[in-house]
Amino acid sequence: MKKMFHEIRQRLEQGENLVLVTVIASSGTTPRGAGARMLVGQEGRICGTIGGGAVEYRSMKIAQKVLEEQTSRGQDFTLTRDDVQNLGMICGGNCSVYFHFIAAHDAQAIDIARQADRAMEEGRDVWLVEELCENGRLAVCGEDGLVPTMGQFPRPLGQIPRRLTLEGREYFLEQISSSSRVYILGCGHVAQELVPVLAHVGFRCVAMDDRPEFADRALFPQAEQVLLVDFERIGDFISVTDKDLVCIMTRGHSYDTVLQAQILRTPASYIGVIGSAHKKAGVFRRLKEEFGCTDQDLERITTPIGLSILAQTPAEIAISITAQMIQHRAMMTKKNA
Image (cartoon, rainbow, N blue to C red; front, top):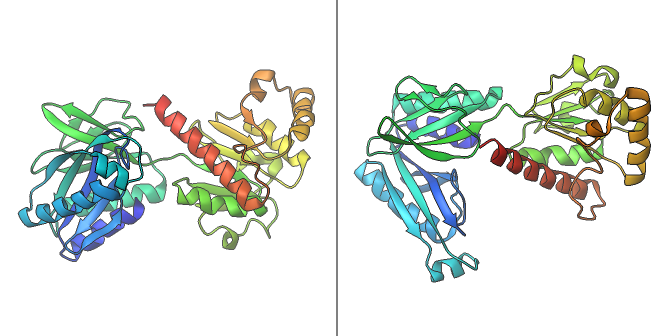
């Protein structure tokens, strides 16, 4: 998404007309759900995808027409049996796609792209608002839901992309930037494999270790931050919120235990700890006896971390952890919708 807004700003400033293509609703088995986007210019697709196959192919054709007519429009698609077979699916579906024309040098759109880029850089909760009409506008808003040029959108805005009507006008809202972070405590081999995979699927990572040679930015170029910390006083370095996820994977059981005791005092939405089922029993006993943790506290901890896929290598373990975090994110998104 960050790349898309960078392209929008740069190409508009260079004098290029663009079409932002967005799936605004879908049902059944379609390639991508609501919120999937691609950016199209005179020479074709610039970045993003709405799933490939028949829908994307037809949308590319329509986007070129929109560039010629310089007018935004929507289009409903129904996947036929032939379309479904071409996509390798076993059933069909419907989707609605919106084609938002953005004129070259559009100062408002350039400013929106700049605001979106800055919000993602700073890690703030921000939503993109598209007005679904012939000359519809773009806007961004924070958690308060206020857009001066459009009105007050009902809160909470939610994490699932959605259409809504406000004062007789139809809009599409999608959260494009989140303040949620993944705190990775321990910068060993698994962490070094984990951060790039998490970053690739949209998680913002902060990697931490108490050893300077491991808390090294060169080892984690995709991380938002790399911190040298004291594991005995982790609260002095980070402030964990109820939107954050924590992965504990230090070099020893004693550090893991101390960190779990501290993280359990935060509202973290997910706490995962690397280790075996045998290790779990000993650590949980110590958390109860030495730190006063209750059974209810311990239920918040996922250990061994990751989905059970018989992972062996650091890279495989990283995939299993990432899969579990994707699952957790999806469940939280549905819960907070």
